[in-house]
Image (cartoon, rainbow, N blue to C red; front, side, top):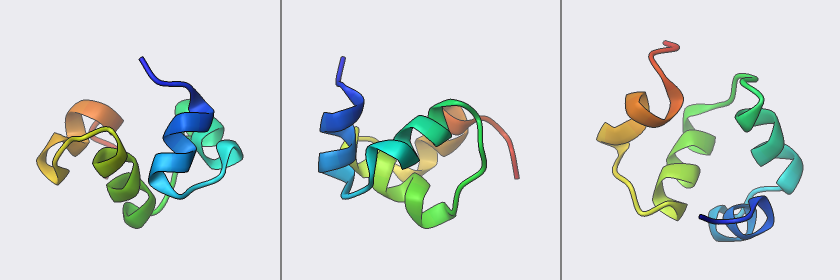
Length: 54
């Protein structure tokens, strides 16, 4: 478990961006990559984390 603030810090994103992604708003692939890396995951885990939105 990680707070939004910690995830934002690790991903070098704003807490607002993390909040919007959690609420299901779209985001760029670069943002997804940063979040995945901050969580210690690989790009291949994208669908498991973000769903099949492409």
